[in-house]
Length: 292
Picture 1: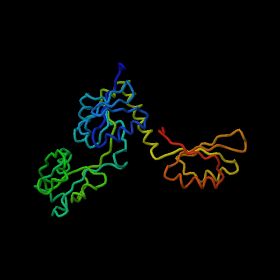
Picture 2 (picture 1 turned 45 degrees about the vertical axis):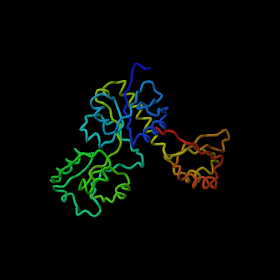
Picture 3 (picture 1 turned 60 degrees about the horizontal axis):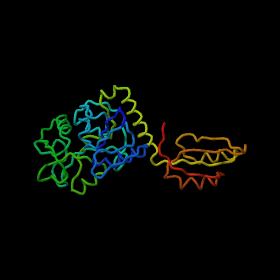
Picture 4 (picture 1 turned 180 degrees about the vertical axis):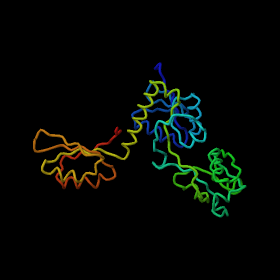
C-alpha cells in the first residue's frame, strides 16, 4: 500500500456503472466484489468508495473525501464549497445534461409556476426548489421525497420537481412538465485543502486527464491506409477527419501512409469511398483514449 493516498468518492446508484465503465476506459483496472463499497482501481495510490451522489459534495467539502464525481445539482443543493475541477458530460443514458423539471398531473389545473401558490411540492431537491419558488414570488410547501416521487401526485403532492434525461418516466406516470428548474452535468470535484496539496492535485489532474481522454475516444476509431502520392488529395477529401490526417513517407517513395481519426458511425460509408479513391491496405482500429 502506498503511503500517499487519494480518497476518491464514486457515485453509487444510477451513475455507478457509467462511472466505473468510464474509469475502465481510462485505463484503470476496476474490480468490485458483490457486496463491496470499495472498488479497486488497480492504483495503490487511490482508495475509492461508493457513495450516493447526493452526499458526495458534503463529504468532499468536509474533507472526509479528497475528490469525487457528482452532479452540479448536488453541489448546489449541499451548498458545498469545493473545487470544480472538470465538467464530465457522461451519464447512464446520454451526453446531454440532466434536467430537474417541475411536473404536474396531466389533468391538473396548474399551468404555470404561479399556479403553485399554496400548493404542495415533493422533491429530493428541496433547497434549490425553495430558491426557485422564492425568485418567482411563489409561496408553496416543499417536502422532501425519499423516492418514487413520480407516484405522489395528485394524492400526496400537487406537483413534483424531479430529474429526467428523456422524460419517459414522467410521461409513463401521467405527468406533464411545466418548467425546467435546473440543468445539471456531472462534475469532478476536489476538497479545497486536498487541491492545495501538490501531490493530491497532480493525482487529480492526471486522473481527470485520463477520464477526458476516454470520453473523447467514445464513438471514434482510427483509420490507417496507404495511397499513391498522386491520388492523395482525392483520398484525403473523403476523410471527415477529427483534425488534419497524419501523412507519413513509406519505403516506396511513390506511396504515403495516412493515419486519421473518424466517427465510428461513418466508417461503413467512407471505406468504400476510400477504396474507390485509390486507398489500399485500409485498417480500422479501436481507440481507448484521445488526449488533446
